[in-house]
Image 1 (cartoon, rainbow, N blue to C red):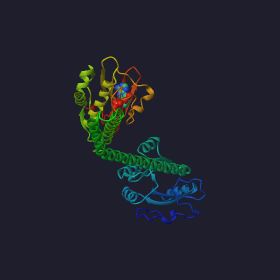
Image 2: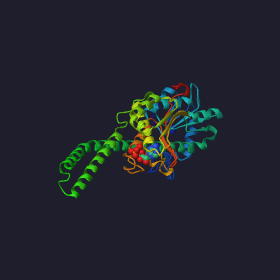
Image 3: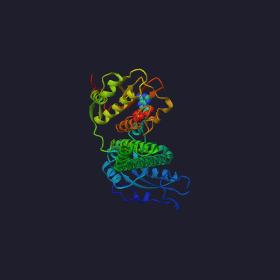
Image 4: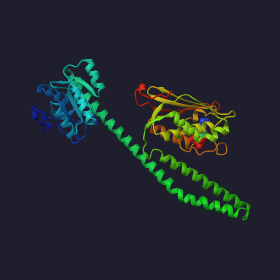
Length: 409
Ligand code: ADP
């Protein structure tokens, strides 16, 4: 046992390995290799004030295949001090010590930002208290007259914690690799711009100066080269725009979506006029957002609704509804629609369902919408059938009680 200033109980009782066989492989933590014959080391902090109960607890752990290495505390201050200075695999807390209760154990761990599983060990604990403990974050609870269940509860709590750690690590790895990829895309597209500009400029110059002066094939080849260079410039420009989304960090402010849609429509003024588009719009809420990014989302979706129109002039309906603490915005058109099996692929960068001669574009618009919406904590999807128009929907968290949201009439 590590010497605990807080422990008034007999320390020699709980020395690790005391009376227990040691196994060459017993460095492993609880639950990781349950099939090994030797006991599993367990570093635990126990909140207990009874010598006898502590002994029963240690015996139960040993019987269940653990070699416990225990510190004992009896006050909140000592508990807080110990958990911050040591690496425990588990906390075993008596629910009702005179002066402080088990719930405080959970509060202290939360306050200190520590993820250590807590198993409540109690003489008697009503169902309500037990449920409350689990709700507050306890991994399990065990009654003192059923201590045979303790090793199982401990093993499961420690294994769950390991899973949480693994999950967190893979999330961090994923986030890091996404950041690296974005950085790569940014640097590559940024640095490609200059040499590409040279290629485009000089092939265009070739086309101007030598058109008709060489043979017919030469004109054709120069035309292909100019076309390819210009297309590549658009792609690189779009890729740069995509990797710039969010690179400056998103400043979220309460944003009036009516004003955002106005701004988007203003930018699309010519397309709206030329196509005879009719916009039907309900009053929209204010949400926490980066207003220029949100304008971009509406502009891309409205621009597509106009671009992918059918034979009839476009009619676009814009709505915002509060559904279960998030705003669901929808932009519904009467255009060419999308086959359901294509509904996911269109959000992938550079994915298009048509050739550039059918409809202009490079396939970046929806990928940018997705990135922006996800950075705001929302989702985006499309509900559509080919030939029957499309409804693009995206969510933005309401970020407070519905009545706190400033809904503009
Ligand atoms: P782009 O418009 O440049 O092609 P987007 O990423 O905005 O790129 O859209 C990807 C593809 O999704 C489009 O090429 C089109 O096939 C399909 N699409 C997007 N919006 C609509 C719409 N409102 N109606 C029908 N198809 C659409």
